[in-house]
Image 1 (tube, rainbow, N blue to C red):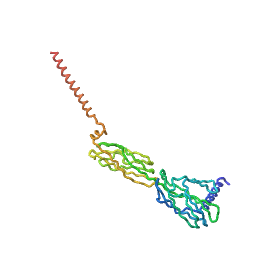
Image 2: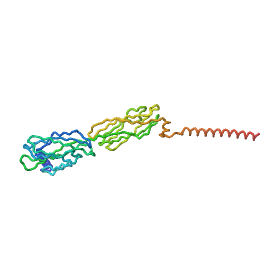
Image 3: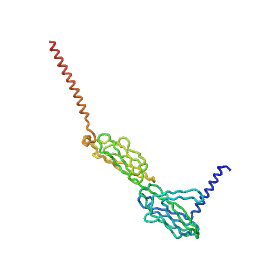
Image 4: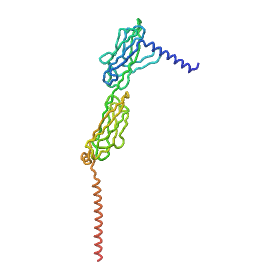
Length: 314
């Protein structure tokens, strides 16, 4: 028999063994899993409820159900394969992570309730919690252990704020300001974009929409916006911003923000120290005056020189 065929047959037999193992190990199964709330943020509590159903064909006794919050490594019976479950950022809240029953009758189920608190530094995501179920079937003295899995969703919402370090702008000219977007929340903001709206007393010069991408928690990014303020614009200019992004569960959010900036006339900007007073006109006048004086001097000197020569000739 060819080696390839042998490998295929071996894989097929191994698959049957694994499936059979799971079927045999399904005497006690987890059903009807629910959480309240459906998603939880770091630092909050969550109530987990699920049923364990007896499919053993006999009553089961001395049932112990444990949430393996610190992780678990399961070796599949009859094989060398292992299923590794990492520890999860949850802790029991005013309750134990173990519950027990004296017995569960055939084809019956029991409900379990666990209260958990999410670690304050938990990242957003879906966490799989292994559930270990120890019990005895009928009159058997051999303990049976099943392992199931329940999933909980941690969704830390980003918290965005906008600001600008601009001390003011000058009317009648193009101005560049830097807008800073800070994520002070516990979750990452993904696929973030910013759109600047209509500006009272001015108009945007160049791009008005910006794609930033991701702003992780406790991080920030910046955009540079160019706009022109009218001469008759008010003393305070508001720049409306529309920010769209997604959280870790790809839920989309749209938030509105506003940047307020002081607008100055040229003279006000000079007085406020935003711009330096220009001496260009004065310099030009002085240069012209020097040139005129020099020309007058040459003319007068020429006239005097001709008069002197005429007197000497006579």
